Amino acid sequence: MIGLIVAYTKNRVIGNKGQIPWRIKGEQRRFKELTTGNVVIMGRRSYDEIGRPLPNRFTIVVSKTAHYEAENCVTVPSLTEAIEYAQKNRPGENIYLSGGAGIYKEGLPLADKLFITEIDMEIEGDTLFPEFDKSKYTRVVDEEVDGEIPYKYVTYIKKAPQKPRKKPNTEEY
Ligand SMILES: NC(=O)c1ccc[n+]([C@@H]2O[C@H](COP(=O)([O-])OP(=O)(O)OC[C@H]3O[C@@H](n4cnc5c(N)ncnc54)[C@H](OP(=O)(O)O)[C@@H]3O)[C@@H](O)[C@H]2O)c1
Image (cartoon, rainbow, N blue to C red; front, side):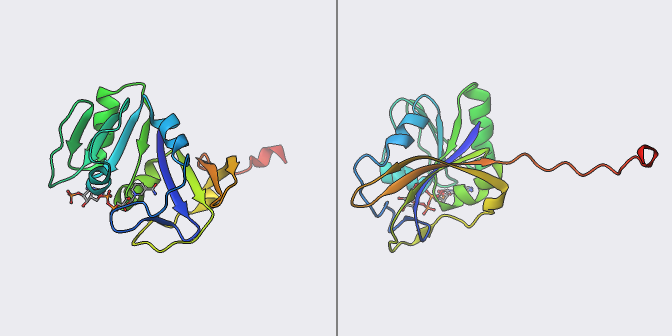
């Protein structure tokens, strides 16, 4: 399974000045639950923000300029190579495209499911999640969390492509 995992606000902000511009205690719980034991693929700037591989999962950094190697962490120059690396070297593990904007844009057509945390506020930011065609997905609200800043854990499941309609067999008429 290739999943995409993101938290964005009502105005689609995912980041500002290299950081996530909100702090909501507990909001990253689903990220941890889903990605633990699996593979996360992230762009170089997102990795720089965290500064080290996340524990208990395999991190693939996409960068043409930097080269991070550590236990459970490699760097490759493109998203395609990151996915190929994961499929070859981490068989049976789910792949989570974890940002930022370039990885999301290129990865959206490749992802079977989008795990989105919809943050119920607007905020200023310089990095946005790309627009996508929501009609191609079934939207399931998994959990709604109240609080000062409410949020929802939502899954968008890609619909199977429509088969072209067969011409009617006129002999049946
Ligand atoms: N809210 C969320 O869920 C979430 C998740 C992740 C990140 N963020 C936020 O998003 C911001 C960072 O995102 P960003 O878009 O600025 O940077 P980014 O995607 O994390 O990193 C950009 C760099 O990654 C490499 N890269 C990214 N996409 C690539 C692609 N398709 N092919 C090849 N290389 C690629 C390039 O590295 P080189 O220049 O080294 O070649 C590029 O300069 C931060 O503010 C972070 O906090 C938010």
